[in-house]
Length: 395
Image 1 (tube, rainbow, N blue to C red):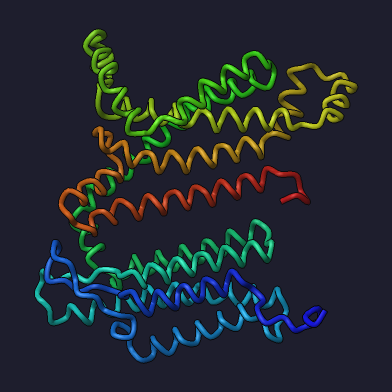
Image 2 (cartoon, one colour; image 1 turned 90 degrees about the horizontal axis):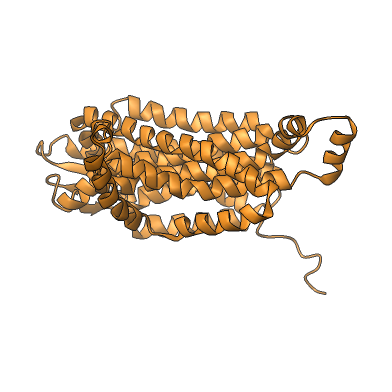
């Protein structure tokens, strides 16, 4: 047994893997690109070409600290987790500042049409910072409040960079400035589509989940039908709804006056509701059937009626599982709404498909980034809600 008491060299394999992946990516991928105009592909600019001397030194210190946390030589496990978590914010801030600073220096004497865009190494540094933070938060098992405070700090840092003029020269920000009003309108449309799909899905899914929990005969048929909806490709569902909705709008004119047609919002919301039903129904069923039988017996022994048991015992105990289903559905709907832009429903997907048509990558990012951010924020907030709904001591 020669290695039984050997000193541990690697303390955090996940952190070390992320560190190595980021190092390889920074060495091989450009940190930024400089192009003469919006549509021409840019020239790659590597990290050591874009960053100033002090920025490279700061990045080296952050990398050394993260490597120390990954190797964990001479440090306690929680100390290395705290060290890794603490260094993610400087890494995030340095990457944003360095990119904005390079854009200002590079465009100072360039033509007005010249553009600076983010390169692969920049996105890799942001992704590494996010994953390191998630890994550290999971290992530290922090309570809700510290996790929320850390998320607010990260969002505040990003918001401060966006609110200042630091990132204004970037091609993506110039695209945003040109399309500010349309961006706001499409963002509100995206949220309206998601909300318009979630409300009917919850209104239908919760009672159906209750029916499935109460009746085995209904449960088998219900899940069979919902599984069919879930397996259909989203684009196929949007296409299948065009003809019947168009015919319905012609046959019932007042529906057409309400906006029901073969393309646009109506087929998008119907398709999103169909996709959202299965997770809502399944989690409601799982939550209600997961209530211990002894708890139900105790409630009956106290003289509660079936309705009182449902509202005061079953639903509160099933709430974390039901909210987990809502989290899945919300993130899924935010992503699927992008595809709904293909049938004229609008939302951030309109920028993505417009950018693909024009081969304008910044326009694609203008739709893709807020969609991802929206999904991440919704997921995080609903995770907090799920944790808050659990009994004290199990959060």
